[in-house]
Length: 147
Image 1 (cartoon, rainbow, N blue to C red):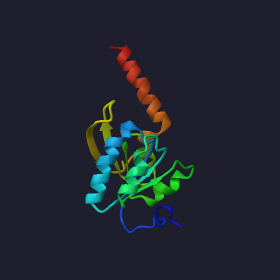
Image 2: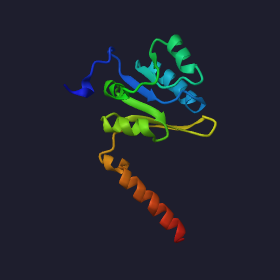
Image 3: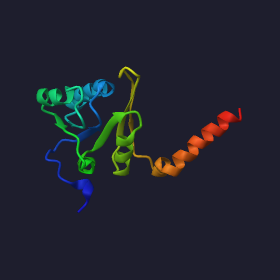
């Protein structure tokens, strides 16, 4: 059985947003509610609904589904068509590892959207390996020290 073809229960494409529903994610999520509604996609929100807006959005919009935090997040990755998140974070990288492209929002410290970008799965996923990241951090410090 191909995990990437698990039944989602809908014939619509699914955008998955995973994370604590706090003030930093509220504006990007509201933007996704609008965009997914316009493009006939479902928006799945998974995580702690700290500010209460995820539950409210799922009650107000048929295409928005809210799911509380879970230990079985992999199943959501396998059922979605793309992920969305703020910055290049864990949700995006885990989605890439499952072959899912991403919508990446850049936000400021107030949660205002600076930009959003669609990103295909990189050909070389080794750029996210632990050793690669550590070496880049070391290189940054060495270069800063030597200048």
